[in-house]
Length: 279
Image 1 (cartoon, rainbow, N blue to C red):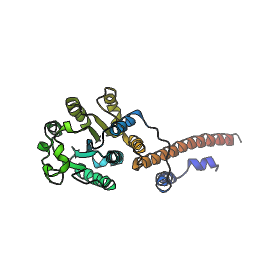
Image 2: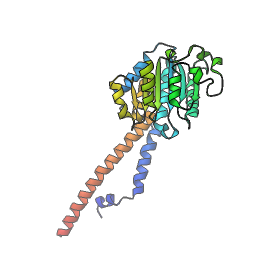
Image 3: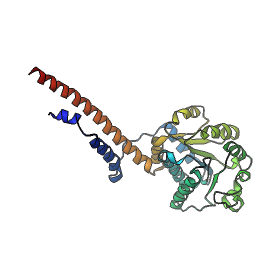
Image 4: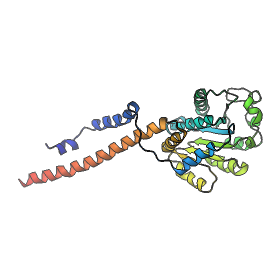
C-alpha cells in the first residue's frame, strides 16, 4: 500500500485530533494573525474616542447567552474604551433571559479594573418589558420607565442619575445585539431624537446593517467575532475575540491543507493503480 492510499484511509479521529490541537494551540502559545481594521469598526471607535471626557454613553446588552462568543467581547471592549475615556456608562437590556445578569457581571468586572464606582461612574438599569414603549418613554423620562436600577435601588439615590433625565443627556448609544432590536434603536431613538447609534451584531446579521452606515443612520458597526477582534486591537485590549480569530484561522488553514492533501492523494493513488493495471 502506497503512502497515498494510507492518507486516503486515514482514520477520521486523527483529523478531529488535529482540529482540537489547532484550537488549543493559541491558548498555550501566544500568537496572532494580521487583522485589518475595517472602516466601519474604525468609525465606531473614533466616534467614542472623540467624545468629551465624562460624557454619558448608553451601552445595551441586547443579546442572549447563546451568542456570547461573538457579542460579549464587543461589550468588554466597549467598556474598556468607555472607562478609559472616563465616560459615564448607563447599561440596560431588552432581553429578559440572561441579559440583566450578563450586564451585571461584565460591567462590574471591567469597572473593577478601572476602579470605577457603581452609582457614580456606571449604572445598570436592567430589563423592562415592551421594548418599543421603553425606547420611546426614555425620550421623556428615564426614571419614569426605570424607577429603580437592576438591584432595586431608586434612581434618585444614585449620584450619576441626578444629571441624566432623558436622551438629551446621552451623547452616544452603543447597541450590542443578536436580534432585530437594532432596527428599533435606529428608527425610534436615532430618527426621532437624533442620538448617534453604533452597533455590534453577530456575523449573520451584519450585512443587513451596512445600509444604515451608508445612510448615516448608524455610526460604526462591529460584525461578528472579526469585528470584535478589530475593536479589541483599536482599544489595545486584546481579549477572547482576537484569540478566537486566531483559532478560527488555524482551523481554516488546517481544513484547506487537508482538502488539498486529500485531492493530491486521490489523483496520485488513482495514477498508481492505473500503472499497476498495465503490468
